[in-house]
Amino acid sequence: MCAIGDQCELVSTSKSIVYWCKSCACYSLVHGSASVVFSSGELVSFQSLLQSLRPEDFNRQTPDGLKVLLKNQSSSVGLLLLPEEVNAIIQLLSNALLVREAMALMTPDIPKNN
Image (cartoon, rainbow, N blue to C red):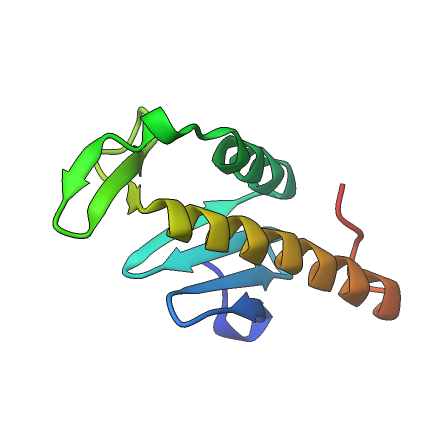
């Protein structure tokens, strides 16, 4: 688990926050009550996955509308997202990567994104 002092909030919206942890060099995406931790490469892969979703992938009927369920094989929980939420997270991740890269340029002890 990351130490509180090592976490830096990169970007946030009313529903989501992206943190970067200096000590473990990982990103944390918090969306609603869900939290997912990624390496730099995993974050880019997750962003690509979100960008590749098609309308037919949103096949879970909820009171809010059709959602997509995203989870990995080793977890029983996942993210249930509306198309608008997917688009917002894609933008949030793009902004987080830009902020993180800017931090690396201005702070010599922070490595650049790989």
